[in-house]
Length: 146
Image (cartoon, rainbow, N blue to C red):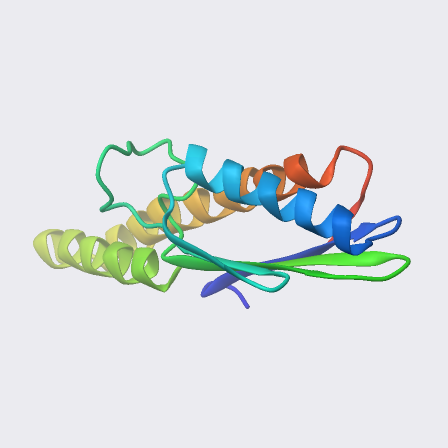
């Protein structure tokens, strides 16, 4: 639900147990490369923490706007890979920054522009980049249904 989370799913042609294990291993590797923390796997579900205040990341990190996330695969034919990424921490940070700009300039317009620029553009760019992150371990073939 905008602006709290990014959600979506990828339809997989078939998802047997061996395929799911391999797929989730790929998801975990992608998360490690993106410097996610607290990555855990329980059954067919992977959870993790992201955020802008992790050691060694920069503003271009795909998980910078994501406080936490979960990726789950449901077996079957077709199988479904569902994801949900929460960005409440980033939203809070941007609201504080935009409010500060607005108060310093005493302008509601400056607040609105700052919020739309800082949150809106990062949210949209993040949505595209996060879909790519999830899609990569799942293979190039599946279509995403958001």
